[in-house]
Image (cartoon, rainbow, N blue to C red; front, top):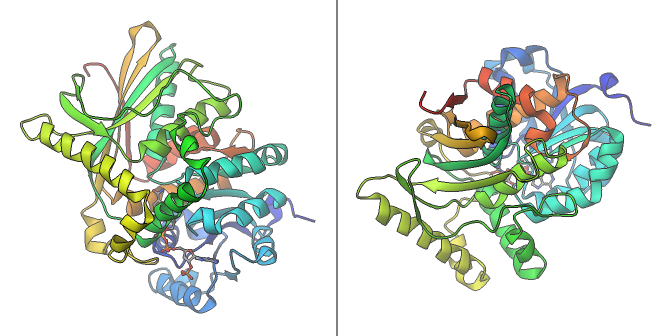
Length: 413
Ligand SMILES: NC(=O)c1ccc[n+]([C@@H]2O[C@H](COP(=O)([O-])OP(=O)(O)OC[C@H]3O[C@@H](n4cnc5c(N)ncnc54)[C@H](OP(=O)(O)O)[C@@H]3O)[C@@H](O)[C@H]2O)c1
């Protein structure tokens, strides 16, 4: 018998705390004034490494000397059950999620434990929707994927513009988003997740059509006005720059569209969303756009063939490895969004952070998503959701308070 959420031992269990990103999330939770009174626990598969991590956290936050430690294994269903029953929220960085994540999601849905992760593996998220959305909705359990750099700037950026349009008495028709102004690194776990996805696409012929479906994460019947992701380069007169395909659009655009669909189309059934990479507008812009578009197309083709990519894999960071603290300190990103609404209203959005997008900013976004699930009075229903459809304005307020920039400006000001 599962305890009601308010009676559980913990508000948050951080699953995968000893991994590269898990550690950053642990450090963030340990360092926040709000979390001084948080009931939380570190969880993972190795008690010794968890104890070592706790000692490191306690060196700067002595109140964490007795922080509880929970041990389990992603492949051991009983251990997962025992962990998820004790907490209101599980926050997980154990990836690749397609390899290690399914049992945890199932256990959370069974125990009515809210859940957030950093998954960007679209076919796996589709499987979690198909397997658990109805049960999670019935139990009021929020299962929230994609709570990192993919896909919060896109998903919550659009939600922010939708809210701003609503306040002006009108409704969104279309949003374009541009990424590109950024500096950041990659970790072994992120590469492992991409390779897992590529292997799956090679094994299973149903995966490639799913990846190409712009509404791949929508409820049935799937479809809408957006076509396939635009390929090639283009001049963007509204920004005065060249654009090229953006690699993360493949997940971000599907998440934004699911946010609309799963919440009953608050952005409208004819809402359109597109995401591109912006390059400089000067003389270097055109060759840079050609290089990005050509490089991406070649890499995507070559990566589909294991024999072509295997020789390069040995140079990639291994699980547990990632950018150094010095590299992370140089990180930043700026995402620009342009919204068109009914009645010719145009709004500009900007999402910006002075941290490494995939790790510094992601640790902030994931930890705030977990805190939001654990502590904020949310009125959204349960289900297999997206950051915007589950957490919306409550998460936006938290991310602003955490030092990220989320602004909306009217045209010309
Ligand atoms: N969306 C984004 O913006 C974003 C950003 C960053 C990361 N990510 C994703 O986050 C995930 C983690 O990345 P990372 O670089 O932090 O990976 P990592 O360093 O390899 O960490 C993976 C974690 O999983 C744990 N683990 C592995 N097998 C396990 C098992 N059988 N049972 C329990 N725990 C197990 C590892 O435990 P040990 O510590 O004991 O080895 C480690 O804690 C990846 O899927 C990555 O794609 C996404």
